[in-house]
Structure formats: structure tokens, C-alpha cells
Image (cartoon, rainbow, N blue to C red; front, side):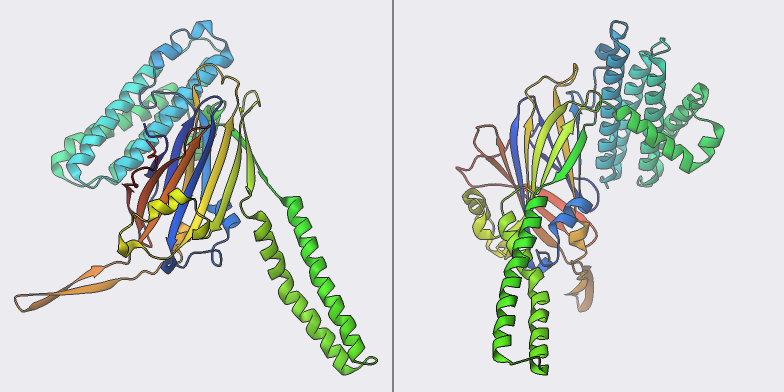
Length: 461
């Protein structure tokens, strides 16, 4: 498995996934090279607003075997474990099961070839049936453990049914695949009947889409208990920013005061000319005060992390990891030398002026062992490109061609290419790099492909 996986999440979003073990000290930097023709830069995109509105993350405990969890070994000795340990193992399986099915479903929905789509759908439906069967085979009889199991079973049954129905609603049409479609529909009906037989949900809840949806959201939060880490985000430099504001105001007032004294020396007494001069001075103060403060703050903040985050175990409230986060626009001259060397590998037609948006995250994982059953933590960071797309031109045009005296045309769309470079440094090891090309238009990401990097620069495996 790659140390950092890059994949398309939705039509206009990119996800980065990586795992960290006990004691890891990791720095991950992402550089987005946005062509200036896109119109995106410090003048049009506020970094803090983008961070809070378009960058989302999820950090959770992670165990190997995401798609084939060892359910038997996890629950075979459940009678020997405490209720809390049973709940932790149950939640770990249920959460990873849901994430795996959700991930596979999203990838499957991007397949357009009918034969490939239905082959993958068949494999997914068989995997769902297999995992649910193994899961239910280990249902506890203890009244203390049973409610936890029923909550997880209720959610997984409903969630798998929803994912399969969603895939069928978007499936390519074709009579040759009717038997496969009917088999998946029968599987969804069986899951619905299973929940009815167990009386998991009242008829009133089932008949109201809002109620059933909200109930399942609640059940999902319950199975995330002990698995998804609680993050405490703190904005850094709040006090320093206040000091910067005060200093900038003091500097402006010093200049203003000097000008006022000078003006009083030029004009004797209170005259209309003096009043007008003072009005102009105060007007210029209001104009330049904000600009001076912002310029000074950018200079002081440059290179400093903007946020800190503490990741806590939701059960024990123990701090699992601490993170520092950067997000800022950089000048090309400020880039590390290896990044500059990688950019030189671009074709001449791709060497366009670009704005560089840098995202960095430095994580220190605790030296203490995780809870029993957990081997590492997984971080998923999702970058929405919707704020970028707002600035793009639709750019629809026509290309004309002639054939046998007849003139025809094809509609073409305006596409943009974003270069993206990842830099990863783990502990005292050397920094490794990877480069990707993201091709997008105003409505969707068309392609994400990995590119070669120059020899001599460590490649991220």
C-alpha cells in the first residue's frame, strides 16, 4: 500500500489517505500549482475561509484487513472479554465495514462500461452478503452485549441496502444484465425483511424518510464511539494578531499625529483649510490602516502554522496525537529545491505561471500503545475544489472540420490542469516526493494521474 493514497472522492473533491503508527513523527506537505488563468490567488481566495469551508478530515483507529475483517477471531472469545472491550471490537469492525463498502461504492459509480460495472457490482454484493453472514453468526446472547450488536446490525443492514440501491439507480441499462439486477434487488429485500423480523425500527420510523435517516445517523455516531478520534482544533497566533493590530495602529497614529502637528504649524488658528487638511489626513489613515495591518500580519505569520489539533480517544479521553497545520499561498522562489526540480520536468507547454497553495500537516503520535486491537490511526483529508471551480470559465466552443465537402462541428469544453506535489518526511528519514496532475473543468474532475519525478529525488512508495 502506498504511504499516501490520492483519489477522487466526489465530482469536485480529492481525498488523501495515510496511516500512522505509535510514535510516528510525520510531516506531510501538499503543493497545489494553480494556473494564473484560473484567477485563483491570495486576492480572490481567503486561506482561512477555504480551510474551514472546503477542507474536511476524519481521523480514526485503523486495523489491517479493511475489506475482509477477521470477524471470527475478533468475536470468537467474546465471552472472555469485558462489555467495553466487546463494544470496542464491535465498533471497529462495523465502522471499517461501513467505510469499506462506502469507498467501494463510490469507486464503482465511476465505472461507465456496463460489463465492468456489473461484474464489480456482483463482487460487491457477494462481499456484503459474506461479511453480514459472518457478523451475524457471532451474535451475543448476553443481554449487556446484545443492544450494541443490534444497533450495529441495524445500521449495517440499512446502510448496505442503501448503497446497493443507489448503485442500481445509476446502473447502465441493458436487458442482458436483468438477472444480476434482480439478484441484487432480492438481496436488498432480504435485508429489509431482516430488519422487520428483528423489529429494529417501528413502522412509523420506516414510513418517514426523515426519521429513518436521522436514526441511522445516530446509530452511525454510536458505532464510531471509540473508533473515530475526537479532534480539538485551536487557532494559533490569536494573541500575536492582536499585538500586530495594536502595533500597526500605533504606527499609523504616529504618522497621523506628526502630520497633524505639522498642519497646525502651517495653518495658524482654526481655519477651513486646517479642517480640510485634518479630514484628508484621517481619511488616509482609514484607507491605509487595514492594508498596513494585513501586510504586517502576513509578514509575521509567514511560515508559521495557523492551527493546532489534539486527537483524543473518545472513550478514555487520552491524547493520541498532536498536529500543526499550515495553509498559505507561497511564492515560487520560496519553494524547496526538490520541488523546483520536479517542476522542471514539465513539458514546455505546461510551464505556465501559477499560484502556489501550500497545505502542511505535522503529526506527532503518542509513544503509548493504542487500545487492544488497534494497530495504527488513519487520517483522511478531503479537499473540495468547488471554491476553485467558481472562478473557472465555462469556455464552451466549437471545433469545425470538413469531410467530403461537408462542414461539421464538435463542442469542446475548457479544461484546466493543476499540478500537485506531495512531500512526506517520516521521523529522521529523507523526504519523499510524488507528483500528480489533476485535470478538471467547471463541473467535475476529469482525471487524476501520477507523473514521474527526476532521478535522484526520493520517490514516495
